[in-house]
Length: 145
Image (cartoon, helix red, strand yellow):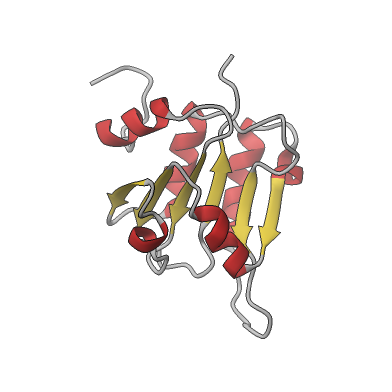
């Protein structure tokens, strides 16, 4: 065990996060996301029985968001005609505001298939069992100072 590492962060996840460089991306995926097929060229780590929000909060304690891009956080946009509510996005915004002074300005919503394309280039995909719909999020790593 190490001091200062959130207990939810497994050794496998800690290793993957520390291997990431500036500009690399990670996906924290909900339970419906096709993690294995989208992440076939990435490291895929399963986090069953864990939701996205507690994992996001813990990762953001260790992981700086990229300050060289305007939108280092991407959310999957609700498909037109889908009447799904996305209250989990407010939880994400709260987590992000705690660690990045830019607040909600760092977040973009991107169309579903564009999100999948972006996710295919991620270094890391974390597959959770989150049941909220449209709960997928992509983070771009910044510089550790």
